Image (cartoon, rainbow, N blue to C red; front, side):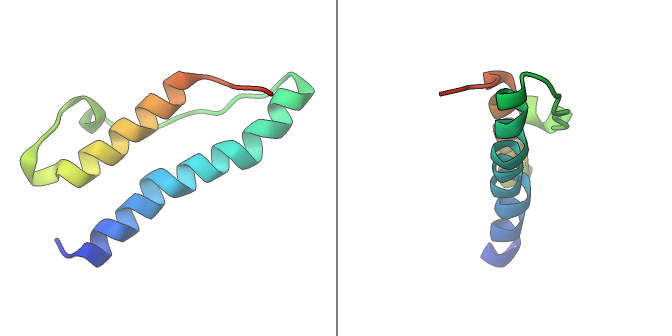
Length: 72
C-alpha cells in the first residue's frame, strides 16, 4: 500500500477517533453523563505483517477506549 492510503487510514482510525472523543467527551464529563461506544476490531489483538498499519490503528482505538475518561 502506498503512503497516501496509510495516511488516510491513520487519519480515519486514529486522528478522527481521538478528535471525536475530545470533542464529544469533554461535555459529557462536564455534565457527568453520557457514553461513547468504541468499535475497534479483532485486528486490535492480532498483529499481522501484511496488515500492520490497520491492526495497529485498531489497537490504538482499543487502548484509548480502555483508558477511560479523564477530567481536569
